[in-house]
Length: 441
Ligand code: ADP
Ligand code: MG
Ligand code: MG
Ligand code: MG
Ligand code: MG
Image (cartoon, rainbow, N blue to C red; front, side, top):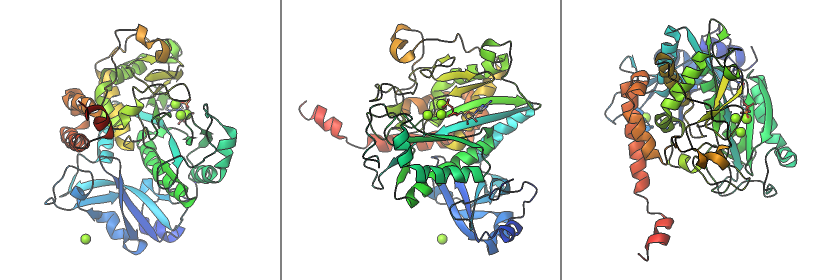
């Protein structure tokens, strides 16, 4: 246990506050669009909030509720406690949502816990690691912050990485202190883009850390006069922000995806799980690539660096980064579909729901495709392309009964309704492109 994470044996938040000098708690929840909402609660009031929850008007955040609904209560999970490394007197807590005494089914963290529960009845635990790419940009959001970061192949650029030493190491030091097993930081494939990696863990732990990482990266960047963005495609000619997920499933303390005799060291359970991801890929896009902007990262033209590093079709392969799924190593695979806008909880929930369906139906993912998908993809005619926009993805999502059964009908309905609203809002905008192409029609 490290100094700023919770001792799993200790759950009394008032006592923890007294021990650690926590003056305020952020009782936080993540809404359907991935935004974190919180109340800042003084330690003097935490005992009552821990028992009964902090009250919110759910409709005021991205949840499918009405202004007339009763108060929604966010009940903090003490095992998620993180003492902010950059402001130690504040303790951050992920929470579960309740209304009128029952769990709110559409709550993203509740949804993930439900699907984790389905896996648990089969004796399975999902373990995942996420790679949260982000840009450091100017506070106004117009441009990358480092004017000298202009190389056409900027990936792993040592000098550009070291110009951001102060902010990157402050974030990495925080992860080390939190006991996340941080192990590397690099400049990524776009100018101004970085990635920081920590060790995989149980899906709920990774989801809470993913949510916290975004908050932390933004907060620490801001303290350095910068802005961190996870937007999927902030600059049209540069590589976008992916959020690759590495996935394995465990049973009785051993990796059920590992089999030395299986192809590439992956077991038949692993291939069935993968078959579920392949079968439901279009629908999963609504969760993993959840914004209008996400589809400017997927299916994109090659970027300035030469490649987008994002998938365009529903294919899998070995250690080759041009496909939707890569098997980099025995006993796990990497799903390259998700982007920086993915809700940390719904990413995990979607992957697990699709994978469990794959196992239940013994789905065959078909043959591995060992080609350079970017340069030779046109030669294969029978592969499914990823959805070209958010609307197609949301329609696939609502049409998927199998995913709905696992994720929950009320969650699926709520999510689809809000995403349709977002799409309608988008289509109500008249763009410059339309004027340029249509004024003279
Ligand atoms: P790459 O850039 O090659 O895709 P990274 O090193 O950036 O990979 O990220 C790999 C992620 O995969 C890390 O979070 C790591 O802990 C995680 N990982 C490694 N092995 C497993 C596994 N068996 N199950 C789930 N995640 C794993
Ligand atoms: Mg009020
Ligand atoms: Mg990586
Ligand atoms: Mg990367
Ligand atoms: Mg990766």
